[in-house]
Image (cartoon, rainbow, N blue to C red; front, side):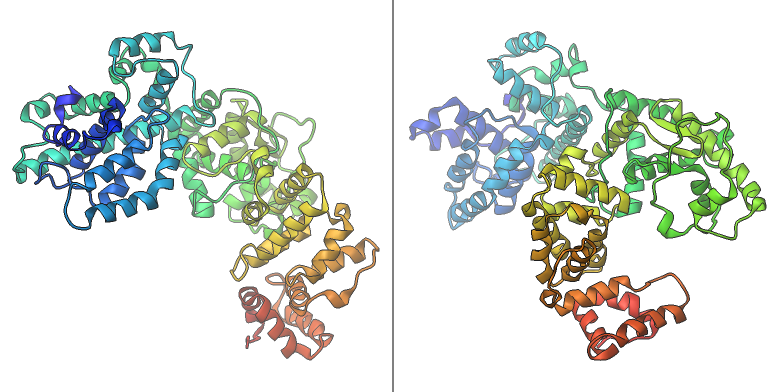
Length: 598
C-alpha cells in the first residue's frame, strides 16, 4: 500500500534522471530516494516541476527531524540520504543546489547524531534494526513475521526505557498523521498541476492506515501490523504506563524547584534491585489512594514528599519539621537540608519529638510543650500519609525520620528520567567532568554536595590533578553570575584534610579561591605564602564570611566595619575589591547595610 499511497512524488522521474551513475542502481538508493521525496512532498515542497523542490529549511528538517523519527536506515546506507538531497537539488536552476549542499554540510553531524541517538528511536525503528541484525529481509512481511517470532523476548537498547520508546513512538505517530492530514488539505485547497499526493481512496481508508503503510515502507514490511497485533506486547502503548501520571507530577515538582528539567537532581547513594516500572505503579496506586478525603489535609502532598526527599539526595527528613513547614512555622533555612538521624527502631505509632529535639530541628529556641502539643495533630496526619507510602516498601518511616528505600530511590529516579529530568546515578555523576559536576552541585543541599564531590575525587584516587581540576571549576563555573558565590562556597563542604598539599598550594594564586586554599593549609598546620593570594581572592573570602541575612542590620554592619578597619586602605578599598570580584554577591550582602558599590 505504501508504494502507491504517496502518488506524484516524482520518484520514477527522479530515478530516471539520475540513473546514469552505477551507485544509483542500488535498491538502497531507491529506498532512500522514496523516503526523501515522500517526506519533502508531505512537508509541502513545491512539486510544480514534477519533483519536490528542496529548500534549505525543508532540507534541515528532513535531516534532523523527519528521517530520525520515521525511517530506519541500515548501517552503511546513511550517506545515501544526503546524496539523494544533493542529486535532487541539482535538478533545479539557480543556486538551489549550492544552498542545499551548504545545509547538508552544516547539518551532516547533527543528522548522524540524530539517526544514532537512542532518544529518537521508535518501536518500529528499533525492531527494524533488530530484524536487520538477525538477517531479516525487511521488504518481506512473512520473513519479518518469522523473525519477530524468533526473538527471545523484547530486548531494549542500552540506556533506553520502554516508556521512552513508547513516548517517542506516540509522538512520531502524531507527527506523521498531522503531516498526512495537512498534505491532503493543502492539495484539496490548491490542486497541484502534477496531481495530488494522496488520493481520495487512500484517505477514505483512513489516515491512520496510510500512516501505518508508510511506517512499514520506511522500517520493515508488515512490522506495524505485527506490533499492533500478535506482538503488541513487544511495543506497549500508553495504557501500559499508568505511572506516567506520577511522573508528570514529579516533573512539576522539579520545575517548581529548579525551573529546568536539565538541572540535575543529586544522585542517591544507593539504588536497590527491582523493576522500576512495577515499583512506580505501586507508588502511583498509593498516591491515588492518598488523594481520597480520608487522608486530608496532606494526602495530596505525596508527590511533593517523594520529590523533596529525593532532592535531598535521599537523606532522611523529619516528619515534625515537614509538618511545621506545612503549618507555616518558622524553620531556620540553615537547618532545612541537614540530614535527620534514623533510629534503629521506634514505636509504630508516631509521636512528636521532645521539645529539645524540636528546637534542634527547627532552630527556634523559644518553643515549649504547648507548641509541641499544637504540632501533634498535623504531624500525625503527615505520618499517616507517609505510612501509606511506606506500605509499598519504597518509603520508610522510623520514628520521626522518613525517606526513600533504595528501591524507592530507583523508582523515583526512573519516574524523573522518563519525563526528561536529569537524574544521574552515583556512577554517572562520578564520571562527569568537573565543571558539569560543580554546576549541578551548587544547587544541591550541602551534605549531598559534600558526598558527591567526595565520591568524584575518590573515583580519581584523590590525586593532586583531580583536586586541581575540581578547585579550578569551583572558581570558574558561573563566574560573573549571581550563582558564583554558591559555587565557590562548595569549597567549604570539601574535606580539605585529605587534599594533596601541592594542589592547595597551587590554588593560592587563584583569583577566586586563593584565600580559601590559604585557610585550608593554615588549618592543617602547613606552610603557605599569603603573599601569593590575590587581592580579589582575599576580598571574596571576607565577603563570603559576612552575615548576609541573619541577625539585625546593626550587628551585620558592625561585622563589616570591624573587618574593613583591618583592610589595607579601609572600607572604600574593601568595597571596591569586593565589587570587582563579585558584584552580584557584594550588592546582595552590602546593599541592605546601606553601602553603595562604586
